[in-house]
Image (tube, rainbow, N blue to C red):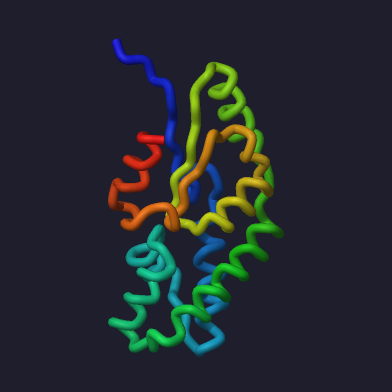
Length: 157
């Protein structure tokens, strides 16, 4: 019988419920150019995608100029840090479950479509850093989720 030795977690929606924060931060950045994504479109089309993919969709569907990607992305990240810093906090259920798994000897890692800096800020604010051996961001792989590259990379580590 194979014994489980490690557990891989997604961050957004599993360890930290930040999907609304990403939605809010992107809309704050898009609002600078008179654009927004409504809640329905966010849930059906954009949720879970890296910001670059979201901007590409907005270009093809609404004509968002590609020249704005860098600025919008930078602003979205800044707004995400601000929101995460203000709203992210430890939760009893996560602390209890992760401490139990760590005490049982499981190695744990997190894999996210977020950028590394966002993961660092949110993990610190949620007091999760000490439970994980490492975490991988969308900056650590060529293909973002749902492509399995991030999980394959984590398994090899």
